[in-house]
Image 1 (tube, rainbow, N blue to C red):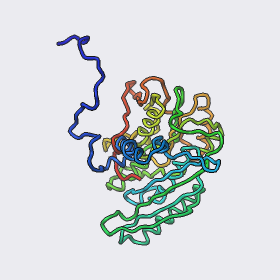
Image 2: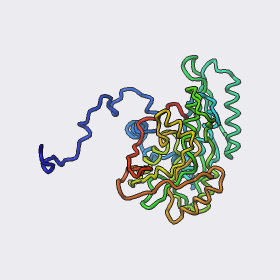
Image 3: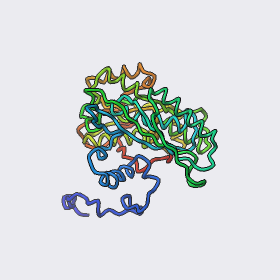
Image 4: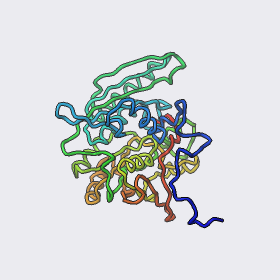
Length: 359
């Protein structure tokens, strides 16, 4: 056996790696490209961003912060293809509104106006469409936003899935607020606003006809009011992200990569409801990768963390808020979890998502 000192010291060349299913060589779109994980990020970085040009797309935020007429605006768009259309705790209509206003809120913006476009499959019952529209109207009212414009298209029967929804939103960013993933800094405390995994497991229970011994409802909810309560304590929130597709793991990895810092996650402190933990154990899933639709991850300066946490817990959407980790100088760009058994494991960016068509 060669002595270890004789081994080559040159770094490995990823271009020489081989894999039965190369991750960067897909000639066609696969489901993982829509999963909010590594494949989604590659699609944006290597296909869309170069085609569109400019730095706004390359920033990879939940929304883009733009200046117009002297005002700082957050601008975002999203599409919803969830199956089934209705599930415990919500519907595609709730998701379309809440998901969009939450993306705006993650920039610190006060959501104001939405657009709403429908792509409908021929043969869809108007009563179904009516339920979706009513849900959108009710959710917009609850979030304090106005649906100001929209569009409708119809595709042939068999070429859609009933109802798809696209939304765009704009909101005003208050003066003095600069929230973006690049601002996460060593020493920051990582906070989650409440129990995780509820949305993904609620969808799975309906889609797969599974019973987990207790009812699990989606956590879909608007987070603008919660973010305003946090900003009232300090405008110096560094980074916010709502952990939707790819779950908490994807959100933490995206912020770690953008800021060039490491993240240490204390696994035992992550609030995972017992029904979600049981369902994930049964199905072989990791709750950190399960989608959420009414939670946020915050990177907060350590000296303001206690005050922010207290303000979050006073708000209905942050009653279950908990500190789950911190930002460190070690392992930049990487998320490492400390387990309940005092071990460590790397929490990677997911390739796609554990359950497609989740939002």
